[in-house]
Image (cartoon, rainbow, N blue to C red; front, side, top):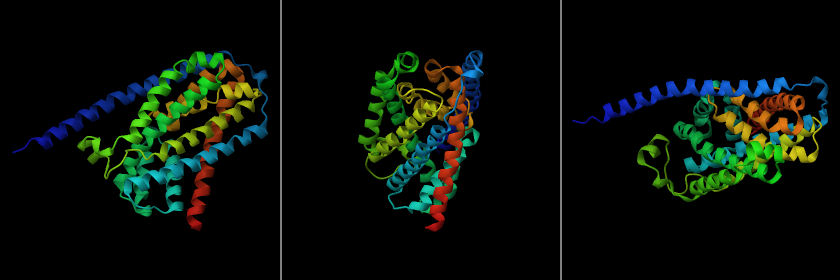
Length: 313
């Protein structure tokens, strides 16, 4: 007679209880953070300080669209390595773009659900498509943190570095070590329970070596977007470069805030901390609105572009 099923059920029950406690707590912390950041922003608002260069604002869409395609290509590469099979190019890129739109659902549950329901169409098991979210996330966040803090350390002005960039050397070193472990350590070293839960099979590193490179390219498109949209509000080249790294860190924090759809509010709060010392309160608030609008438009454009490609294919 064995008690293993009972023990498993007990572990799951404890995990569910922990999630029920943590999610409201994290949501409350996110709300407090957003209110604090925007209260200070509103206090310093000056409606006469804003003038928008619409050409640069529209141009900031281009790197976001390129980034969306790059991220889809990175996922195709990952899912092929996880499933040990080739997948159709158009269908896999379109599925990824569709899952990216689903991140606007609170809790981020839409991303794995969309990928799992579309897995059959690209010839991979649903479990692998769902677990790819975790593997992708480990590289996505680690590389993003490295690139974001690295740009702050290299280009950030004193006002920005004092708030967000002072820990750059430590953060970049730690995340660099994480990425190195992900691309070097064999997946067979993962605990058996973890490998079964996330459908991790075969041999080789958990994260394919090309994946962090593609994710680095993706995050650089966000830096380019940040530079252009900041300059659209009158910032000079040095100021636009100084805050480029913040446009990488903000969506990462927003993505990790499970209660916020697509990081709405949390991402803008982080951006405001980096933008206000450089461009001022009124331009900063306008940048937040323009950037959020550009992100939504770019997500839809990428989805339409890749969906049309899949239909033609």
